[in-house]
Length: 251
Image 1: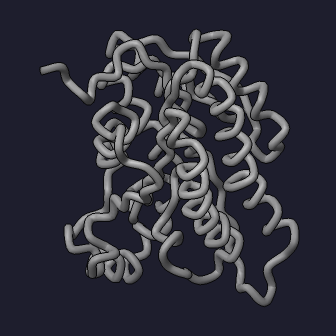
Image 2: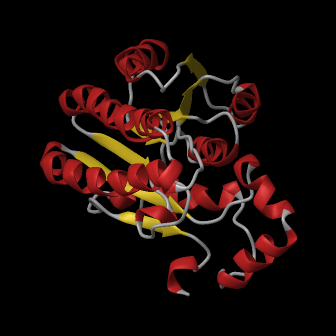
């Protein structure tokens, strides 16, 4: 029996894949056989070294997703450099924190432009390539705040709730066209973005007490979910938001 998780011959575009969760997923996809393109503002040299050490091709595309007009160019450059786009991982995202009563329009627009507007138009640009090619896999990165409200992150919560809805909408429209659209909702992961929370003794204790697994997630913990949703093993999975959270939502 052939391995349904084998991604050899596939090209995956991972946005924000220079570090953290994006890097973890990019390397996992490469381990499964995919060639990797990382798009973002910062250098992804470390990701590239890890991918190439696995014998896979690696390419980098410079992009600032605060300007959604860049997305067509990102997809076009991906195809030009790597030959195709079979998998899209919409991972790039930002967050702004403030009490809702004091939240500014700039903090609202900045987050929404990157987290949902650019994500949607990346899906659209990728689908325009995938449909004529016979299909593909799109994985959007949601959040625990796709399910919960949180505090002091009005635009982030709104954008990640929108990602969950968008994922279902696109699955409804594109499933019959051969594109699987799903999302991963990470829980609390040990990354640069959560360093302050990990360093706060009281907050760190509160978080760990809520996680049945009893630990923070490691970026590698997202790898299996990403490979599954990117592979033929998930051909009949559409519009799902898969929580990878150590049991956070179950508590």
